[in-house]
Length: 397
Image 1 (cartoon, one colour):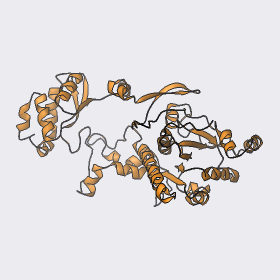
Image 2 (spheres, rainbow, N blue to C red):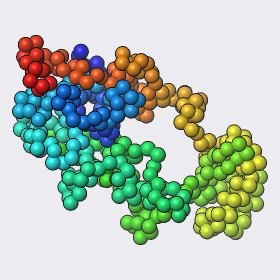
Image 3 (tube, rainbow, N blue to C red):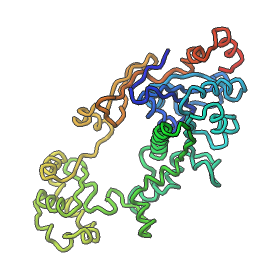
């Protein structure tokens, strides 16, 4: 089966995918969805020792991460398997891996080995803690990075103790940053004609995502603490109960604050010395939140959202996941798109959150079966049926 690009944007880019679990596959999915020819390199099942790394192949997680790719099996622990991989590298643009830092060199497929056969190759590496330093060889997982990167110390209710985020934010952002790095390297290569090695880690990504919270420490010397549903600096911003549930309100800034007071029927709050300024509202946050909630409890979430939006005050419901996809705005954006698979049937998955009006992305193929395209890819390299059968017999593919 030849490559069918999911978009025109990267349709001339060939990617060799050595990744598994989440951070690496997230990176490669970005490239595949925008049209890259991705060949997912997998260990032949008969020699694999990994049990469903990344979840069951026909499960929702795997299917979501590995769409728009082709798959071939290749035993990189055998000399002939490595030789075949390096032949693939000769015609590739990008290799993505998320082994522990020492593994790729042990296998003989580190950057210098790849560069020797293709000086234009771009190697993207994702690890738990970085390619250098005292923790480089440690195994790393999302929650470990959330803890070491500071996120868990500022998530949750005050005094609750550390709380992990509800999504694997370190994995996902590391994957997205690696994909950004690949695009930067491809762009730079147009000028220099040279490839390069780029790398990121779960820990680096998590620290970067602290954003203004890290700046509060680095510039101001303040150690942020848990603030629960309250925004740590913009007040009032948080979760408020209504007569039938909860809602988010973001009424910070003097002009929005005044509009909010009027919409709640308490215009006098804007002139109250306890609430008049950002600083005063910060000092008296608890009393102000209690006063606001006493009002929001008098009507439904839907009524308050309509009233506050009419007044130009940012607000919104707090959805369960099923409610997210039932929302009319989410439907208008077309965020869930169907993908047909011979193995698991047709199911919707979330599309890319960027709309390119002239060169849109789409779903062209479901996550492939293990090694589904091995014969076709080897044929493209010049192997005939007899040679391929021999490779299979010797567990090379």
